[in-house]
Image 1 (cartoon, rainbow, N blue to C red):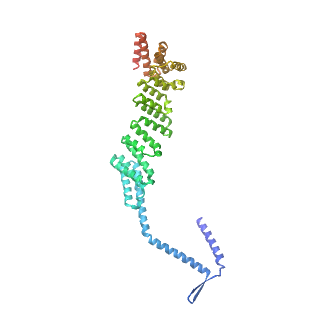
Image 2: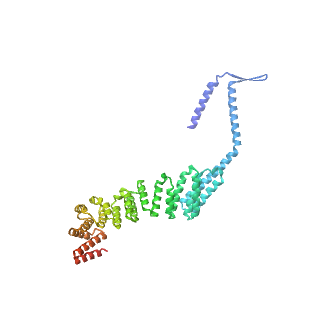
Length: 415
């Protein structure tokens, strides 16, 4: 197709030349001293075009001859550049292949080629990547001194070049990851804290921060970070629920006094406070500080919608309330009776209502509910044991030692 187009163009030029020059009768005259030379205008134009072409060709040949050393130098630089790039790619391949000694040698060879070639010294991104590969290989080989040295070089060069900004961010993230491998949570958190805001909110950075916070036993910070990861869809829904719950448990278990517990509860996300397991753990912690009113206040929303909870959730909430009955007010009785009426076969609800009625002195109603809870085989052993112990205490108050002994025996059988 290309040959056909060239033939068509050649024919077109021939036709135009024949039409133009065929009827051209002009002359070009040249005078020199007493001499005169007349030539046809067509010949003059052809000679002029040929002369111009010859001059251009001579000029290009001279430029090519004069620029030969420069092109030879550029060729040598390009060859060294290709060698350096090949060494860097080999280092990357060896690193991913687990051959860390070879990767380190290839990265150092790439850096040596760059140092020996001044024209390549301006490629800061290449230099930073070479140092990072060498540092990563040294880290895998447990050579922390060389790793830190290479990392310092990479950060120093990246900080001086805007073009290597992304490489600097990667270097800081790698440094934080290596600090976690060294079990140095404080350094990892410091490195992550020095990141720009946009980088610190990336999923990988948040994952590293979560690991560092958990390693450093900063449960509240870990919970906040995990909440951000959930918003960034860093976990599946099931994994997110379990992780947030376990982190909330850790945060609640680390408090040392009631004021700290209240601040933590108020600082929790609304979704965490709506979790029955988290609320039950918080209520249990509040009771360890003797704050029954706080415990009941945190459990009240769940008893207002007991029928919407699952069996395991009802059991954990009811058990927490059974521990929180000291000083319970009469306003709780209608709520508990309503829950028991809606769920008459639920042993957990019976346990909570029975303990509350016993606390209020309504021993007759309490005994029936506690016996139901103690005989409910679907309940776990601890709440059933609590029900039998409460029955034993009621019997002891009434002076019925035989019934008290039988209740204590039933509690002992549960371990």
